Image (cartoon, rainbow, N blue to C red; front, side, top):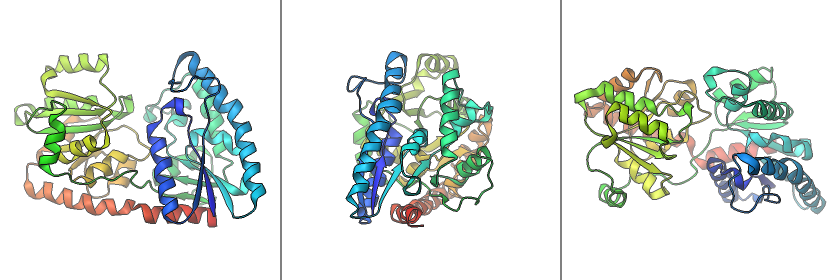
Length: 378
């Protein structure tokens, strides 16, 4: 068997999708599957340019939606002419579902990570993904092609539920649509305290307890809840808040000032992997209050590093976190504060950490890769 993985356009800087592709590639190779990779190239956009706005965004569309389908079709014909092994083609990101049109129907599939942008384009407020006029057209195009996928994997049962609802089919109608959870895309472990402190010291990280959030500044990530949570805690806790991921924007920084806790907020923009592991391993608790998620990698990353987790009570995060997290209403910072106070009991904290290590076993890459291979053997 050989699987050609179809990746994302470099200019879009979708780091999570690049990590997914590389993790899938490595796991397939470990299972003795031949792997090829093809992704859109920069023809109209200069190399290393970001294509998320302005003229470069439109030039990127030409690269992705006009030039690349031609290149992809030529690659498909080349692979099929070899006829030395079974060849399959897998699109790693549902936002590229339009490439299914140039792939052989019975030899291709796609991973759907979430339907949040599609829901947002259709007016679902709970998705927290507003769409522009152009975005609505793009998401309708994406959905119309997803409906036609012969083989499809979603990364959570919740995503499968919403996708089948959007496609107006019942769960299980298509036997080749499977739930295959994400596996870890890198190694995470409880870093030794002296090593983590040494790494954090290079960032001028303050000493003392801190709570951690990892992710972007998108509205659905609900970063401001951590500020409200600390206000609720008042004098019961005087530690720091660390935001790792996207830098804090001007509006958010103004919000921090309004809360009067600017000296208690630390931003670690786009940390490298060892630094991220150090943050997970050292935090008093990992706080993940998202309004919507397709999967929620940071939750299991934190658990793998021995961090107790307090997460939003949305169904996706409960599916991923299992019994190894405290869940709270993402609209009620007081509930997150109460959950944090529960961690003052050492028995509860120890129990959560132990359950977290156990929960991480569900996302073993070997098991999930075999499920992925079965998708193409069926």
